[in-house]
Image 1 (cartoon, rainbow, N blue to C red):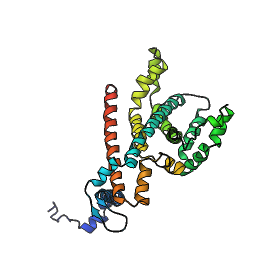
Image 2 (image 1 turned 90 degrees about the horizontal axis):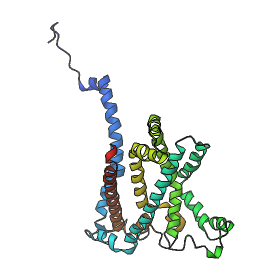
Image 3 (image 1 turned 45 degrees about the horizontal axis):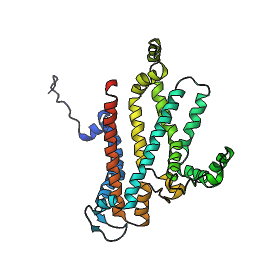
Length: 308
């Protein structure tokens, strides 16, 4: 009862729902439920089904036979599956080159450089090109007697002394890795530039007053300040090297020992129709990426422990 003797009106659910407070809760709930439902339907349920399929010998259509962990054993015993995992080391090596080149150029272009904006756009442009289109470009670029061989011929190299860039097993994977480096280093560079430009200029002034050279400024100011972006770029690059697909699939179709893990997985799933084995390969790859990501975070936490 109120002081006037009149009972306080209690709102019904419908009245509350039409009120300002109810509308706020409704909007917030809708914005939460819709993305979560999409995530559940298109990510978590398919992932759970992939794990389930990995325990069966099955095709897309037809009977299924439960085989337990046999598919996982095949991933590490089959030459094509395990060999594709070892091939990822080429792309990991390429990611190191990619990050080093991106960080070096980002450090230079973060300061006033004549034509710096032009070079930033020029080097970032390959990342904007579709991966399939890049594959076709480099397929002709590396073809015997075409663009790359012609340029080397202008530099004095004899065509007969040059290797077959896409057929020679000693060089073909390095050629494909070079394609990935060319495409992605611009993206890493732009991320590095954004992080470096956020560093206060007063730190550089204080360092110069103390007699620090450019390398010391990079080691003790820039690198610790961009720790988060550096770790992010490393994680993205290593994860991308484990899941490389477009260059070997479009340029060589996985021939001559260039089939990466994803190319082999595609062949097993869609050509050989061994869905259970392909699902096991997907789960193994996800596990490897998860473990590598954790190890990277622990490594950089130790490396940068004095900069926190």
